[in-house]
Length: 154
Image 1 (cartoon, helix red, strand yellow):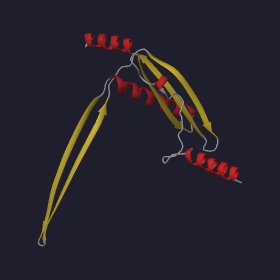
Image 2 (image 1 turned 45 degrees about the horizontal axis):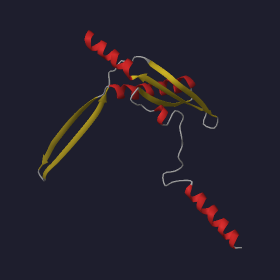
Image 3 (image 1 turned 60 degrees about the horizontal axis):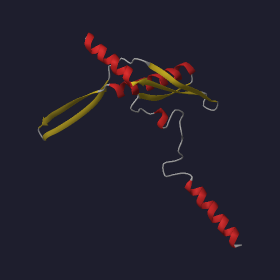
Image 4 (image 1 turned 120 degrees about the vertical axis):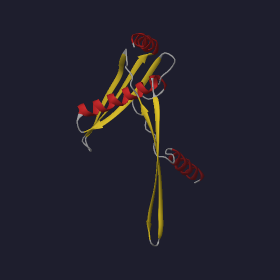
């Protein structure tokens, strides 16, 4: 009887530890340290979903290339607008103020020596959707040589 209670308690405890407060952890393809940038490579992976496999691939491709471009060169621009207005009538005045702040990340980066290091495509029969994952890398030395060459010609 004691063994049965002990086994039941252990099974219950093990089952409650499998999921965290945030839900079940999912490992996407091309995740982990071997797909992250390091001192030799810029690396990025992208994910795209669509009912068309070509569109899903394009979304993943653009997503990964955008991340790579952001690692190489990013300019942050910030715009702030302040609006004030007042409406008056015989009963009083109504004053309204509005403040908006927008920060935008702007990238205009030519990528050289770009290599696709992986692509995986999945199809979900239930939702009739394709999910594509792609991973790219750029050798940092090659990219810096290209940027140096571009700076000399500009």
